[in-house]
Image (cartoon, rainbow, N blue to C red; front, side, top):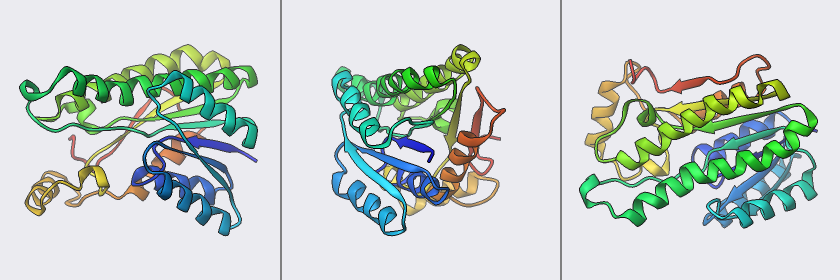
Length: 241
């Protein structure tokens, strides 16, 4: 059985990715930080479908907790051929109103968490000479978003990490790619008003907001394609054109 570990799996894109991989026969390790109940509910849903899934809690900004999460997950599943770095946080507001602690938290989760998970997963992937890592950036990491400077900068860093790591571990048989979602109907965008959403639809050539399932399908595609690496796939309805 193929196994995947998905961070930030308690809701939105993470949950959709969990279900997409489970339907393809993967054993799925669901990471959560604060969303324990949601992650466990999704894992139970998969098991009722005849699949294999377990949830694991960890603060991804902690090296110790990331190590323990992988240790427990590998004890349960064995080798993970796929890692999906989906966990992320946002902060909205003027840069001049942002504290250093708030800035550091965004980078700690979005960048340091991704680094720690990649480094730990690569230990086994390089040894097995196979593996696939999919990071999740954002359209704002490509074009920037007003009042989301830290989020945009951290997601741009994820893109840089993806491309550099793809070159670094390609000779070891490991692929690294990135999904860059546009405006997606997720809890992270739950604070947007209907007027905000209407304006964003109007700026999108396909004239609608994306779904978590559409992003999850793209994650699965990049995870499984054997000759794609170092790429950033925009799932944004043409918003960045």
